[in-house]
Structure formats: structure tokens, C-alpha cells
Length: 343
Image (cartoon, rainbow, N blue to C red; front, side, top):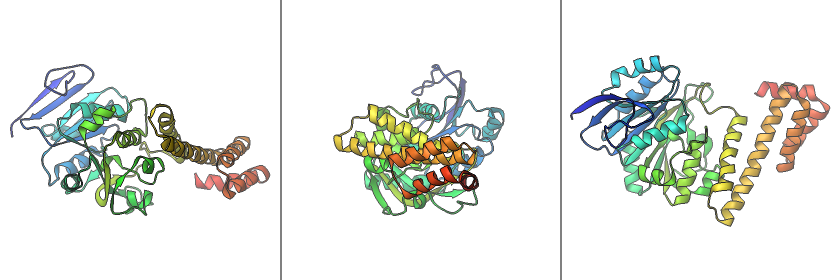
């Protein structure tokens, strides 16, 4: 298979003609691939080589690889790390604008009918693409998600994503809008292979969302009529690292709430869906206030802690919150010691 390499100031994804917005090192195959692998990259120079090796070890071979450097501060080291792979990837560079923009850059440049997302520090097992494409063919779905084994953190080593977040789910099933809203089902982005066209039709990743943009996209795909499915087959490894974007419980709840606020204001929902979303938002706000209460108590800000615990209990009353409120009011130093050990 012949290929050639070009370096341009910008790339029009449908051709080799320069456009505007980012720089690119391109390697174009003569055939159109079935799958485009999209890898956004930011501060991952130490991991990208291992990640690319996991892609090139795939038993399924009808794919292209698009790596998008999202204005990473470690670009010099990153480009040194990917240098051995430049004749096998399409390398795009842009100013730092976040993972959603980087993924959209890759999506717009993609030539495949399907998009396989992969974070630049995660790893696919060799049969990943083969098993995912087989699953899509057999099930007739628009999006397939596989399970991932955690690694990199001794406390979670060996556990899997779906065992942790959807332990009672069936081995194989579809995913509905309300299941996603209720967190009964959860999709890990590095384990998703999806048809490109439905994502283009619903507007790609929301670039206004710095985090949780994948959650928002899965919701919009589900609402649009796309069929989302999962298989609880471990086909990848998800790296747990302290400097990742997932963050702590407070930021996690805040990210979800931003998406739920968007759902309330801009999604076209049925009355039943709207009622369900309202209830979930109320519960998420209660969780957020409780986590903020613990944070304030741990740092000795007892008035703010009481306010947060009171609001959490108002939104969703419970004995645990009432005990936390009592301790913060009458034994604040004891509550501080308890919370300080847990954050």
C-alpha cells in the first residue's frame, strides 16, 4: 500500500488541500479505511508510544490512525515519542482547546465509516477492533462499547469499568437515554466504536463543555434514535492516573450537572423524560452539596459545611446527612478529623 507524507499549515479533512486552523503531518493510504482511530493527546508523551503499539498490534487491520496534539506543553517530547510512527499515522496539531475540540478535529478529518476513540494513555488488547466490529455487525448497532480493566493504580488494579459502575447489568444489552441519565449504564470513551455519520448529524462533541462532553454526545445519539449497545467483554485497559481529567467527586458531580443543565434547557424531551431528568438533577445536586460539605469540614470552614449539609438534606433527606450536620454543628473538630481522613 503506497502512502506519502505532507506537512501543511492546515488540513481540509476531505483532501490534501490546506485549509485553516491547525498544522498536520499526513500519511494518506490509497484505500478508504473502514475505521478511523481518533486519539486526542495532551501531556501524554510518556504514554503515547505504548498506546500506539497497542493499536498497531490489532488483528483487525482496516483502519487509519489520527493523532491530535491539543496544544500540549510537552510537544517536543511528544513528537520525539511519535517520530517512529509518523509514516503510519495522521498527525494533527492545534492550539489547546480541550478534548472535545481535539476529538472533533479527528472526527472531521476521519475517512472511515466508523470512529474508534482511544485516549492517549489507554491500551487496546489485540482483538479489540476485531471483536468490536464483529459485535456491531451481529447486533446491528450504531455504537458499541466494550469493558475495560483498570491499571496504574494499586487500589483499583484488576477491577473493570463495568463491574464497578454497572455490576448488575446483563452481559450484552442496549443502552437507553434514561439508563444513561440515571447512571444505570455508563460508556467508557476508549471502549467506544461508533458510526461516524450519526455523530456528525447530532453535532459532534459540544466544544463548550470542557469535561463530560462524551456523556453529552451519548445522550444526544440515544435521543436521535441511534442504537447504543455494550458488551461486558474486557477488550482494553484504562489507565488510572492522578493527573488525569476525571478529577475528584466534587468536580465529577459539577461536570455532570453542567450536562444536566444543558439537557433541561436545550434537549427536546418528552414529559416523562423531563420528569426523570429533573429527579436525577435533584439527586446529583444533593450529592454535590454533600461532597462540598465534607470538603469544607475537612478544611475547618464549618459554616460553609453546615450550609452544604443542610442543602443536601433538603434536596434528598437521609440519616447520613443528618448525622453529618449534627457533628458539624456540635462536634466540628471530630467531623473535621473524619472528613480529613477521607479526602
